Image 1 (cartoon, rainbow, N blue to C red):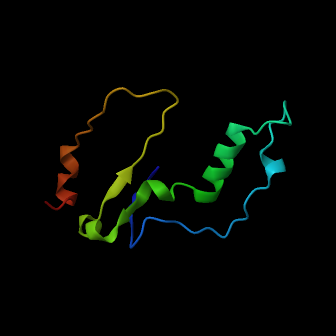
Image 2: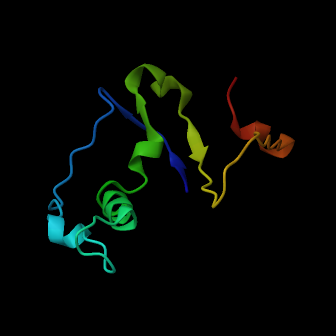
Length: 92
């Protein structure tokens, strides 16, 4: 995911999407259980990537642009990406 940060007074989101009912979240194989995958999918569908880009207004002067990577396994260290040719677009 990539995009500019969204600067807000409070880091909260309001959605007009309907809340799922319990039947929507039941596990297909075991109907007496709730499916974690369905809960996560529903949560992602309703909130989307916006939470990754929210920052409070006190940081608005930074005009931050973010790149978000999701992985399919745990990450134990960081990755530095250095792009000197893009420095011309940054303010220090």
